[in-house]
Length: 404
Image (cartoon, rainbow, N blue to C red; front, side, top):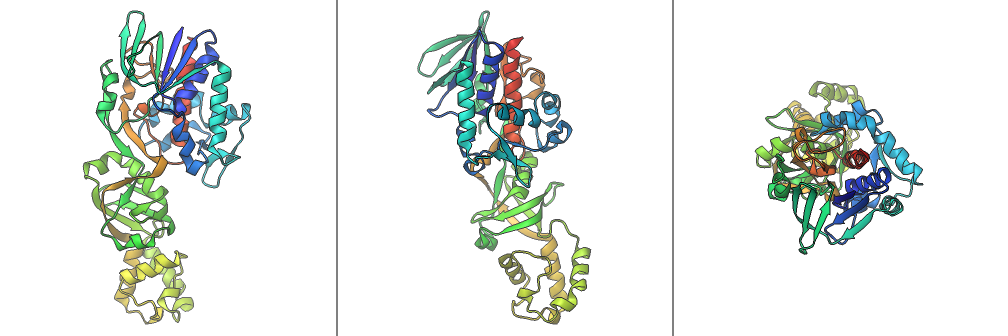
């Protein structure tokens, strides 16, 4: 049996390794169009590789996927975070859990994961061919005929497609030609551009937690918010962009972001906190009167936005000044005009319609012998190791199906 895996990323390697393990007499060939495999693994997590997340219950794990969560429920029961941890441990790679649940190799080096995968593939007998880009894939009575861009041709009994996401629908045309419906691809996990907002001067400042909402919608997210030289980023914004990928696209990436700098604390509770601390802060200059523990630069910026002089004693502020400050703390507003790719975290929402894929095997319901894994499917998770977990899971099940 000839098995061809198209795409040398996380899902592709996992699929190829598993296929070679369960079908030892098969020839498993992995094709990578570039001259480097596992490129996204290499740069993930700032070069540390956020391998998975310490969310061990499938019912909870699926809640971190804006698209594909329901589809992944049973696959995660077969191969979820716990199985991923064990898989790497059995091959000599220990993972550690950070405070937010993200898991990294104890070496804090993505090379550890890359070396593990490439070594496992070599031991299993996987043949890796670089610089091999597929131009056409055709189903035949004998399996599949592949034409590469260098005009060479291959025959395969089964094909596993792990080519990742594409920014344009045209990138999926060769799969649509095999009868598949393509859910329109859109960017997910992006940051908010705020070209006209002075808050960009605070680049590097983190407010945690902060709640971010998109005005006129029900979309909101809470978590650390990072101010950058182009606008806002951090988990709160990235998660919001993931869950709201399609709604934000419909808005043309132009909208108002409403920020509660205190993580969702209500106006009433903020007012009560100020009253409670009035004896402590009444004589202090406004710049030193923050009872909420916000970053000093952010507090100074918000005071200025409210029109409050930094040196004025808090107790001398008129009622309307305090009300304006409370409104800014709980319902600040910023004009968003565009998006920016967030380093390696960028993923694509969209891809192969999940209704056309068997979740038990990842086999196409439209074309027998064709399998999918990873981001080529209409699956995407929030930041935190969830996209890699989907890649490991779908890759494992696709490769495992070669034993049938």
